[in-house]
Image (cartoon, rainbow, N blue to C red):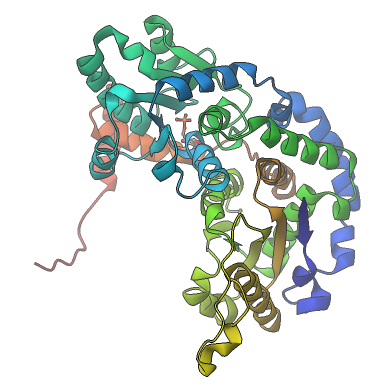
Length: 448
Ligand SMILES: O=P(O)(O)OC[C@H]1O[C@](O)(CO)[C@@H](O)[C@@H]1O
């Protein structure tokens, strides 16, 4: 079960300068109905991610079982949309001590930081490891660089049997990895071409790692299916969770100056959900000088580092809290405490967690800072499936609000082009000249 409480984003709670008038929300009625119709038509094209909840998971589950039976370590090599989803599912839907108590142990090779690479290598036995290389384009530098090192190590350790330690998730037809996998006879899963990386967690990109980790991926998809159903029939903004979230963020951004969207779960397990949301919101909506900057905070930890700014600093934020009503465990504060702290007696950690959330919300209301709360009855695959689908659809719908294409990311290419040029890649000679023209290190300060 998911609830969205948006009382504290409304003008009647925090005033018209920072909050939304109900009639303002309702004034989008016609836009919502028209856009809803467009989205239903686009489910075969731009909104193809909406079809993922209906896929057959048999092959994924069978291969995941093979990995679970034959390997002690499972490493995903991927970055951005090709890793953040798996990381989010791992951290939100397995025990926090998974890698201590369970198997296969799970690791992610995302960055090209050699010390991080080394630290993972020293925690695994490559002869007992299955590597899932995940890349939609098939050629992202970090992923292919990490893969090429692992490939040479596997060949050295295992000879021809190296193929058994690899599974690729990539474009079903094109790209370096698809070509290489086909020529080497490596097991591969396809990423539907119409699904962008940051919308692909409910494809084999996220589902294979999730199944290997023992997560019930059918429940995950069932939750997404439920949210698709609700959002397919409900064209009234106050009954459609995805459109509501999109509109609240759009109005507060464009009409109330809330250019920053803070997501602050009161559950450590949801920290990576925010990383996943950050890519989705930033890379989809950050276009044509528009968009809203997604910022991560964790409750209660960041109450003690960020709330001063949120309450009394620049008034440019809307806060989304995520509240979890039931956790897998809890600890009660013991009795017979010294008088000064006796008020804690009888309370529990989870109770304090959510009371701190309530207290923080009340303080933000007093500072007229708009905030909404997404409430989960518990963290489970069904609810996470609903949450993923809700935010993906909210992002797609926001594309119509901002009149931008939320499904591409042209601005990420230029940095890659300069990188190719600096690495001496053929065909990037001119780009290297442009770099030499452009880049200076004139103003510096150095302390020995
Ligand atoms: O899955 P790929 O093609 O390796 O891309 C990884 C990520 O890099 C980006 O293209 C950004 O550089 C993201 O959109 C994508 O999720």
